[in-house]
Image (cartoon, rainbow, N blue to C red; front, side):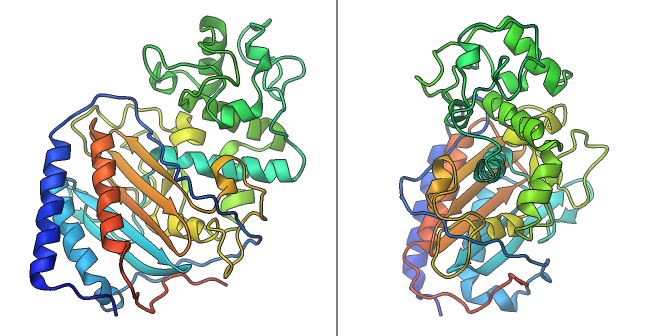
Length: 396
């Protein structure tokens, strides 16, 4: 059973959390979405690629030994003012906690269930890196491959060549590490001109924007760079980005609940939640165009299954062999956050503990909100000395 705190201790922790949360959310920043969290722990993955089937939803009895997490998360959700959420916790590669909270749609009163699907924003990026890692392992892409120009993976199919000389020095690794030289000035490229297709947007950037930095020299977080990685996956694989990821990454991992989002509220994906925000209207966003950097839908269960297969543990084989992951995927302890208008998402991967938190709301102060959620999860899991024997994974 979990360690039991006294009533006074629980109340003290709750009051401290509330005070910090209200203080942090009192500030509001208007910044571009998709923050990133990359812990420095340097562990490595292990081989393998198990399958999975979708479990029956857990019962209250199955999660009762972690009832303190449920109670305090309900308190957190109310104070954030968010309608609904999902939480998953993986301990030693067993899914010991899977819980749905609140409303998926305020107009209809529909509740969030374990099968509800949420936009995950920039947590889409490690999905793209898993796909790219697979292509690198197969020898079909190399990190030092050029991206544009006659010798580049994307050739001259976008925009109007000849390109600027600096553009033709961009490598795949520059895109992976956000060092290609693209700058979101004055706004994030991927949130401009939502009516443009991916191809038209890429062409417009190549024709009308010069790089702000020499490729490989300066870190500047770039959603556009990951859009280009998606196009590289398509060019090399001969499949659409989403098809390749489904066939070569998610399918082998037994992940069945993920897909690239639709843009329109009137055409919702099955089990997709509605989104709420004081930031900007969520639905005019061209989320489908964001596929490789911010376009995926997922359940907490799906991301928990991904975490269990990328955590480098000695007990269960991972999707990639040791050392095959690119960038932070070469470590088994890593994390990524996601934020869009109407979306707040946290993924922490590590052994023995991983967790996922998904909300169907998100505002411009997402940095403070994400930090409050991470602090909450760390507080509730860090010093726990025992966990339930439940396992809501059903590996084949």
